[in-house]
Length: 242
Image 1 (cartoon, one colour):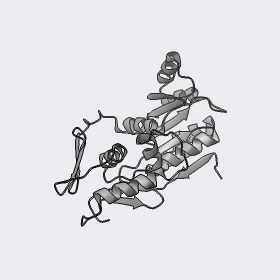
Image 2: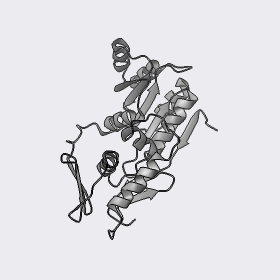
Image 3: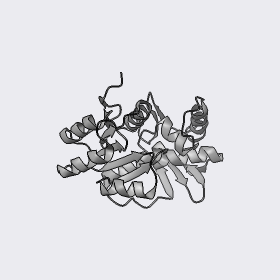
Image 4: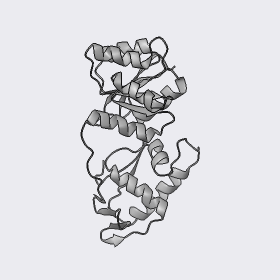
């Protein structure tokens, strides 16, 4: 059952965050909690403003995600009350109201960021991580190395043990995304949105096929495999044999 106050945990890396999702729409709430948990974060959920306000006051969260239109206590009033009580947890507001005036009202109520619906999960995750990090993002690297594998984004070349590996455009894009997140578990949702630009699951084996082809090209014939499947979670690329 998906209850009004729910705590979930799947993966727990060292940089795992505890996130509170205050969202009354069942499908949206399940989508968010599933995606955030798959990304390695601990998720609490409340289905109305009153429960959300209580959870935000009682528990320590890294980020709170608040839907603007909530039963019992609307999102903006909830945020104003939190700020009035000294709770300074970063808040991301989600809303179907996307006009400039709506965003200004949300930020003035005490929100730290505002994301209009519909949105891509990858953008929401990036905003959540940015709120938690509170620092300027690092410059985007153009060359990535994992063990003896090197991916040069500018020249679009891939080499391993000084042997050049020819990849098709989609395979290169898939590998580039994996090496940018080397050592991390990359979920199917993240790959669909960032490599295929799908904001839904097409219920096909497109990811499995491309992962298999990519693994054959970068791992076959080499002593140490780099591309690993994390059962029930996704994929990761790393040089160690864990």
